[in-house]
Length: 195
Length: 144
Image (cartoon, rainbow over all chains, first blue to last red):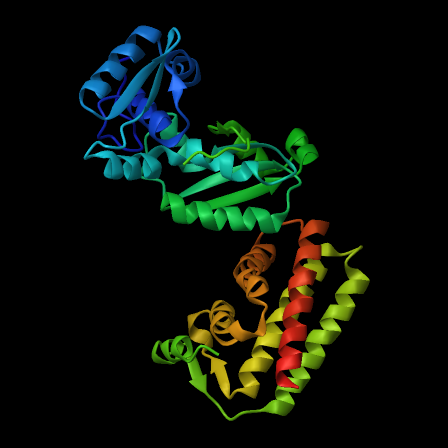
């Protein structure tokens, strides 16, 4: 699972390590098999990385049947700071979906723009904001409330653009063609309680 | 009124003292009421316009309260934003705090409408109308 450092916060030894930590710290506990599938990483490499992180006291794992369930070690002296770093750097991929999940009328959501570009490995400056494309017909006030709360939580301005499903399908505007041509990070818009 | 918070706004230079003007406050309330009636008529055909009217009715009611109390916000530091801060400090006792807390989101959305192609949904108009009716009525009663 040796990959280059994540562009969003190149202090981790690999993209895989950063994403694994972000997924374990910012979302619900998951098994190694789930993580391998979600993060697109090979089982062996992921298992070795999890061992390394567990030995360093950053995560904990427990056997549930034949699976190994990973969760953050909240007693680690690094926990608070590491949680904050992961939230700021990789949080958009994990925390925006559940926040939007409580709003009715959303069909799907993606991050686009500079944050998405860095997330998928396209080099460039640190993104000043997080651009979110939301397909559906939600309450605009509910979206505005979510924007404000997410901006506070992620430490970056979150800007949400709402596009009607038929408009997205047609993709006629220059803006939508530009968005479709660039990287899109899909968000799981489900009601949840990701921290 | 929470005098402490208002003092803070005065110290920050957000608010300044002006002569009390109950007549002008009454005119603002009349305009706010007219906005509420207009938005009832246009909400089905023009939700974005109705939303703007609801926001403006709220802002006029808050400004009426300021005028009646001899205060105004300086516009150099975001007049509409500071109006919301005044409302949370000065209208705390009117029993409409949950509606006042929505003001900042209404302001942001109304601003977004001015610069982006935002389509306001019926549910947004309904929510904005509920906030506007509650705030305009509360200020009107307080000033009567």
